[in-house]
Length: 347
Image (tube, rainbow, N blue to C red; front, side, top):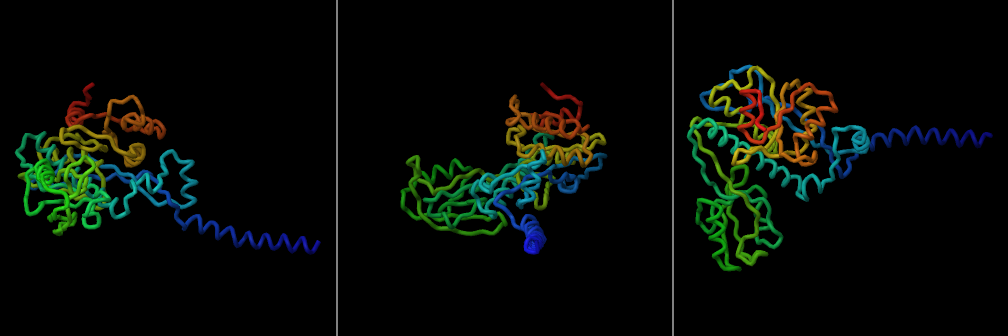
C-alpha cells in the first residue's frame, strides 16, 4: 500500500512538473508553419498625399490586411477551430525564398501597386502624367547565372555594359545579340536606393538565346504634377492597389465619392485598369466588418468557383460572420468609381 501511494505521489509530482513544461513548450517553441489571420483596417487619407490637395470629404477609404504569424503548437490547434485562420508551410508561403527575399518581393509589389495606382488615378481624372522607364526589376536569378550571388531580388538593372534602354524589349534584344561567355557589367540600383555594379558573363539560356539568367519585369515610374506620395509603412504586397487609386483620385479631383461612407476594399490595380484577385479575402472581410466599414469593394473574376473568385469567397465569409457590410463586386477601377457615384454595378 505504501509503495502504491509513493508511486501515485511520484506520478502526481512528475505531472505537476511536466504539464507546465509542456505548456511552455507549446507557447514558446515555434513550428515550421505559419498562420494567416485577419489583420488591420487602415485609413488611406493619412498614407496618400497629393501635393496642394487635401481629402476633406467625410467618411474614409480603408485598405485591409492579413497578419502572418509563426505558429506554435497551441496556435496550430487554435487554427483547427477557427474559420478565419489558415495554416501554411514555409514553402507554401514564401515559395522557397528566404525571409529577406520574401520581404523584398513584397516591397516590390507594394511599390508597383502604388506606382500603378497613381498612373490610373491621373488617367481617370484626365490629368497629364509621364511614364518613365527606369530599368528592369530582378524577380529571380537562375542557378546557372554568373550573377547568382551578386544580384538580389527586387534589384533594378539600369544599364548593361554602360548602355541604357527605353524598354525591357530593347535590353533583352541587346543581351541576345551578345556572345555566350563574354564579360558583362550591370549597373544596379537596390530597393533602398543604393547603386552598385556587378560583373559576370553572358550565358546560354534554356531557349538557346544569350542572356544573363534572370526573370524580370519592367520598372517604371510615373511623373505627375501635382506630385503624389504614398507611405504605407511596413505593409507589403500588391493588394491595396485599387484603394490607393480611389484615394489618389479623390484628392486629385475633389470628387466626393465616399458621400460620408466608410469604405474598405482590396484588389490589385493593373495597367489596363482591371482589378486583380488577392489572397486572404475572407480575413479582410472580418477585419473590415469589425472596423465598422459599411461597404467592401472586392475583385470579381467572373468565375463561378469560390476558390477562383474573391467576390464569392468574400460573400461566403460575410455570411459566416453575419456582417451587415455591403460586399460589392468590381472588375475594373471604373466599376468602383461608377458604383460609388451611382450605387450601381455594371453587369
